[in-house]
Structures are given as structure tokens and as C-alpha cells.
Image 1 (cartoon, one colour):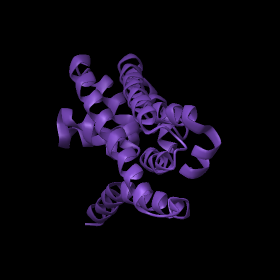
Image 2 (cartoon, helix red, strand yellow):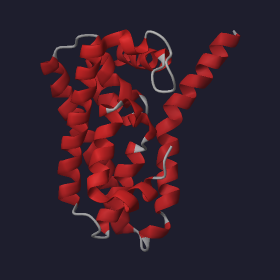
Image 3 (tube, one colour):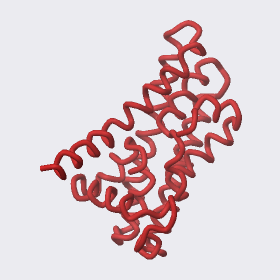
Length: 198
């Protein structure tokens, strides 16, 4: 997992927009720390490094487009990419985890998955594989993109305005968000280990 502060200071706004797109639009996107990236960008926006409105609008567009690319990739290439484990990116387990998530949350997966690392990369692919109607997909895709980007950036923006010298707290806060984001995945892993032993 990459350091969001390093990413932001290195790539700037254009880079943030690309990373938000890549996290769901490209298969290797699960590497990127989307939640903490947006939150940290929100903190920096409170220091006038970014325009908060530009940040939110362009990142929402990138998130929606990224999910759409993931959907069409799943619909076009289907399970062929994941029929066997082929390297680090194409693993059957990633699709299986996303399918399990779909079974629990149904069409709302497109919204909920936005807030779950790794799952958010593969949820639109599974929606495409499962031939979810695009109108249904894009509706929940837009809602999820708006909620995810707005919540993450606004939380960072307001926190940055509440504390003095927010630069000192960016890295600890970003690491905390990364940890919180991965809690559901960690719990799922521990539960599976426990069930396998019994």
C-alpha cells in the first residue's frame, strides 16, 4: 500500500484524479489507498493547496468513469481473465470475494464497495460479469461515487480546518484511515481461518 502523502505531493491534482480512476478502472488499482488519499487531499485543500470544489467534482467524475471501465471490462472479458490464477493481479480469490460481497449486499454493493479497499476494485468487474443492467449499475455507481468522494474529502477538509498545523498529523491520520478501511477484510480473513479450523 502506497503512502498517500507521498503520492499527493508527487503527483498533484491531476495525479489524484488518475489514481481515483485507476483504483476501480484498472486491475492493478487495488494498490492505491483511495480512502486515505481523498481524506489527505481534503486536509491539504483546507490549507489552500487544492481547490476543494475542483477536487470533489473531478474526483467524482474519475470515480464514476473508473467504475464504468471496470464494468465494461468485466462484461467484455468476463471470467476468462480469472479462470486460473495468472500472476499477482488475476486471482480467482479476488473475484470470489467480490461475488460474496454481492450476495450479501445485492445491487447496493456498488455503493457499499466504494468504502471497502480491494473489493471496490473488483465489484464493478463482477457487476459486468454478472450482466447487471448498465442503467442500474450507473445509477448506483454515480450515487456511490458522490458519497465516497464527498465524505472522504469533506471530512479531511473540516478536520484540517479544526486543528492547528495539520501537516504534522497527516501521516498518522492517513495510516489510521488505511487501517480502519482494512478492518472488514481483516475480520473476514480471521473468520475464514476460524471456520476452516472448525
